[in-house]
Structures are given as structure tokens and as C-alpha cells.
Image (cartoon, rainbow, N blue to C red; front, side, top):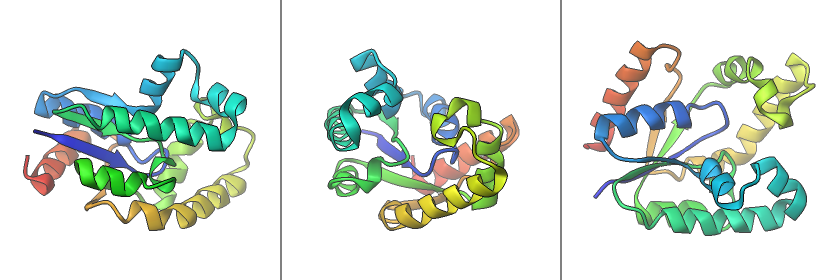
Length: 175
């Protein structure tokens, strides 16, 4: 049975690498944020605004527990998922956990071109975006590093790099 949780900051490549890895292993890929949006027919942003952060995080935890029962699956968590409740311990107890570690400069470059897709980043200057990323990584690092595996996901810019990363991840996890 395969159950792998990919964690890391936004822009780390959880969806990009997760989809490719799931195809390689011929198992379903679940993005926890997409799963939540499908279940509740609302965007993460709408749920966050309507419920507030505390209630949203509780909902997120419940959905994490739900998808953690699936077998033969790759699950991409939201960037903040590991940082609340006992989510990291829970994931470690229910599958293999991988922290997709990416240098802040690479995250900056990836997120800078995607600010229109991420409302929390909209309107930030380059300096503000760099500071935002650095601050968030500092706060989240104690949770991310609890993953069983740490994987350098800094090379996902081309199909060739993604394919190479998939093979490296497969070797690391022994699947």
C-alpha cells in the first residue's frame, strides 16, 4: 500500500511533482485544497473568509483525516496543513511524509509569476514578497522538518527536470 504526503510551502512543487509522481506509480493524486473545494463547492479563500482561520483549519484537519484513509495515493497538502493541530504527527502515522524543500530565492521566482493565482500575494512588491516568504518559512520550518523525508524540489522547471525529480523521489522512498 502506498500513501505519500507531500508537504512544503506554496510554490514548492507539491502539485507539479505530486501529479507526475502519481502518474509514475499509477496511483491517484489528491490535492487536499482541491479536495476541500470540491466537497464544499467553494474556494479555499471563500471558506477561509466565511469561517475564519480557526474553523477552516479544523475543516482542513477533518478532510486530511478523510483522505488519509485512502490507499495507494499521493496526497499534496496545503502549505499550512502541517502547522496545525497534530497534523504532522497524524500524517507520519498514516503514510510516508516528504517535505519539498526549496530555496527561498527559487520560491520567490516561482511565486512572483503566479501572484495573480494566489490572492494572499497580490499587490506585494518584490521586497515585500521576499520578506513574506522568509517570514512564513521561518515559522513553518519546525513543522516541515518533522516529515520523514526531505527532498530538494528546486529543479521542477522543465519536463526533463520533473522526470528526474520523480525518479529521485522514487529512489528515496523505495517505491
